Structure formats: C-alpha cells, structure tokens
Length: 279
Image (cartoon, rainbow, N blue to C red; front, side, top):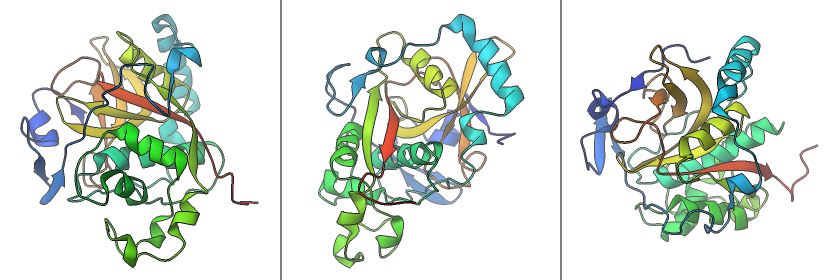
C-alpha cells in the first residue's frame, strides 16, 4: 500500500514534472524525457478503442464516497492487487507514450489472474516510431499492441534498447501472445475525470495524457477525497522507483498545470495471451 505518495499541485509541479514546455527534466540526478503526440481523432473515432459510454455506465458521483469507503475497508483497490508489477523506467527514452500503454497491459494481465510478466515497452513503441527515440500518439501504441502485442523484456539485449537486431530471436512471435483485446476511449466530453474514476472504482487500469505536462502515464490505482472535498487519483510514472513514492503520486481533479483531469485517456480492459498455454 502506498502511504506517502506526494500530491502534485500547481505549486510543486516544477519539481515533480519539470518546467513548462520542457522536453526533458532532471529528476533525482537522471534526465527523464517527456513528449508525446496527442491523438488527432475525436472522441469515439479512435482506432482500436470503443467509446466508454457504449460499453460501461459511468458510476454516479453520488455513489463514489460509499464505494471509496468500502474499498478502503476491504483493501480492494488496484494498488492492493498489483504489488508484483514493477515500476518501469523509460530513462532517457522519449517513450512515455508506450511505457504508459504497456504498463496498463501488465496490470490488466495480473488483474485477470495471470502471473506478472515484465513486458518490453520498446517492442511496442519501436515499430510505432520506426525505432527512433521520439514521441508518438499513445493510440498508435495501443493499435500496435492490439495487432502485434508486447514481448517479454528478457528478449532485449539491454534495458531501453532500440536495436532489435541485437535482441533474442523469436521476440516478435513471443509478442503475438500478449495482445490487447478490448480498450475504451475515456475522453467523454465533460466527463473525462468521471470516466477515469469509474475505471479506478472498477479496478480497470488506465493510461492518461496531460497537455500541461506533455507526458503520458498510467493510473487509476486508488481514489480519495481530500479535506476540501476534491477527489484525487493515485497515478504512477515510468521514471523509476525513485520518483514520488515508488513511482506513485496523487493528482486532484482539475485542469491545468499540476491538475489531474486528463486531456487524453484510455482503459485497457482485456489482455489475453490467446496463442500461449499458461496452464
């Protein structure tokens, strides 16, 4: 359980997120790259996703507090179930778009009862960027993950490698065994925060993009209400365990710098390794 994850606010956002419009920030002595390209398609038209309200009903705000109290009591949040899923570190790669996407896949698999596997974000983001170190639309990564999947990180020659010629043979076949089968576009106009909270209350992992940060992360691990009545969501970065508390931090509802209402988000609902026998 995360006990002391920091709350990112407009006042401390420079420390946790870097200066405005920065393409890289120096955190804990490491350069952490940002930059992703926002989806161009309007809500409901993104390839590889279905508009969320067509497949699930948003939980009314009037029910949030009761569900939060129950999940706190039962310790049944996503964060309570994914201790085995390690925090990823994109290091100096501008691959937040794919690290956030692949992390949601890992979590979805664990929540479906499969053993945790460390997946290669590079096996998804590499083909999307033609193996260049650059930002991309996370929905391109999602489409890649739907068609071709993600391989085990152990196939790579080293962490953060973008040279698949040095990887172990068979990585592409291995990746085909872990594909996204169902994903929801959560950008419901005027209900973006409500959609993410609904997923958090249902233990569905989400990927979230923020224009003010130029960054794509993953979250929906827990929800709480602060003393001012504002809802906050526990999220996780891909900058290693030294960020926040073991990679985790809180963002409160609201738009703009240091605030947690996403500009782009999707939920990875089902990932099933169809072509492998895990029994």
